[in-house]
Each structure stands twice: as structure tokens, then as C-alpha cells.
Image 1 (tube, rainbow, N blue to C red):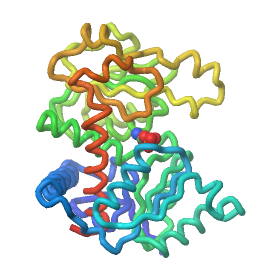
Image 2 (cartoon, helix red, strand yellow):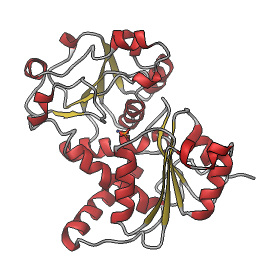
Image 3 (cartoon, rainbow, N blue to C red):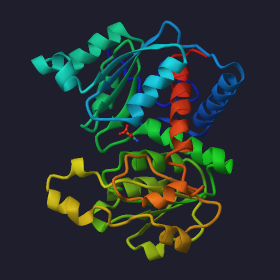
Length: 323
Ligand code: CP
């Protein structure tokens, strides 16, 4: 029987595929965060830390990526491992000759210890994890579904700032319909009590009602708003996102909603507070005024990116059982 490795983590990440935030729980997240801290300390103290020596990780990216691809690649190499890297396998692998994705995955599972996959079609990572391969799968973004490793690094970033993931008030803004990073991050924050999330989007791009209903069952408070004036002043984080042009069939619709909400110094002055952090998964395409970049509260070009590498290092070590 084919085994599905994408089950609940339940404190044991080794050999598990990472497909959705739904697999995690606060205890597993704490294990991940402690591992991140351990790796950071070890690297800062000794410089050299190579638990992935003699391991090979395949990166199979069917969708463009700057950060996720590079940070995984860097994370593997910093830990002493090697990579097999395919950006755009539709042109650079035998998929171009008509090979199925299933066969391609079987091939790389024989050549490597772990496969990291990004694909434009929601559900592909789960399908890959259900193939019964010898290697675990990590989703690096699954169409409009989820982006679990982005959410894990973002949760760590919030945690490292506030020392907690409960009693948090946060704002998500932009494309909440197609934004997979938002879907994963809200699922993660829903594990913790007394969180209140404000969702600011054009009506056309609001969170899918089924997902909202499912999340609300966990007890998380969700308030949808459609006007910047309704942003409360007490948010601990703002998580801005890009409107995803590539998900629109009708570009006129995209033009109508793109950059409906832009962070400007005026908006931060009016609706922000001194203790908040400003996050964005990137890429950004106009939804943040670049004057915000030098604001010490803006961490999307600094800390958030650095945490991406450390979080992926920790995840790789845990999944491969090499610490
Ligand atoms: N945040 C993120 O997923 O960026 P990339 O698409 O560049 O990987």
C-alpha cells in the first residue's frame, strides 16, 4: 500500500512530508523554534555546522521563485548538504518530452534524500506525498493552496518579536483569496488562543468563505474590513501581500484591484503604533511605498528574509533526522 507521509507531525518531524500547516500543533512548532535557536547559536559560535553532509536534496520548482528556491538551496549548503536544482523543469527536465510528474518524482526520490516541490496546481504537493516515495516531500508553494514553510518562518518571526503566538492582534492585507502564504499563516495562528485577525482586501479578493468558516471554528477571531480607515491602532503585525496577477484569467479584473491598498508613511502614521512590525512575504509590486523600507518596524527586507534561511535549515535537519 502506498504510504501518505503528510500526516500530523505529533512531535516527530523526521521523515514526514510537509504539505500544510494543519499537520502542526503548538508542541511541534515549539520543537521547530527551539531547533532554529539551536542552529543560530551553533553557527554564530562555531561558524561551521554540517549535519546534512552526504545528503542530497532535490529542488523541483515548476513556478518561478527567488526567495524560497534560494533560501532552501542556501540552507542545504550551509548545513553541508548538496542539491539537485531544477528551476522550470517544464523546459529543463524530461517533462518536456512528456514524462509525467509522478515518474519525475520517482526518479528524484531514487537520486536524493528529500524533494522540495513548488507547483502552480493546488494539491500537487499532497499528491506527491501520497505516491509512496522513499523520500519525504516539502511543499514550497502549492498553487493558491498553501505555502507552509513561508508560514513557519513568519510564525517564528512573530514569536521571536513578541515571545508568544497567543493574544496577538494582526492585520492581513491585499490578496487574501489567492495568497497562499496568508492561508498557511492564519491556519498556524489559529492554534493559539485569543488571536484576533483583521483581513483587509478588496471584496473580490477576500478570504474564501469556506476557509474562513473552518478557521473560525478553531476560535480565532476574524474581522473582514474593506477600508483602511477601519484598521485598528493596536495591531502587533501588519502582513501585506501582493495581488497575484498570475492567478487572474481576466487582466482587466487585476488592473481594477491591484494596489487598492498601499502602505504609505501616512497610513503607518495614522493607523500604526510604535511596537508593531511590518511584514511581507515578497515579491512586492507597488503595494508598499519604498519610503517605508527604512522604517525600523519594516522587517520584510531584513529579519523576515534571514529567518527564512534559519527556519528552512531547522526544517531540513528535522525532516532528515540529522541534528
Ligand atoms: N515569498 C516567496 O514565496 O517568494 P518567492 O516566490 O520568490 O519564492
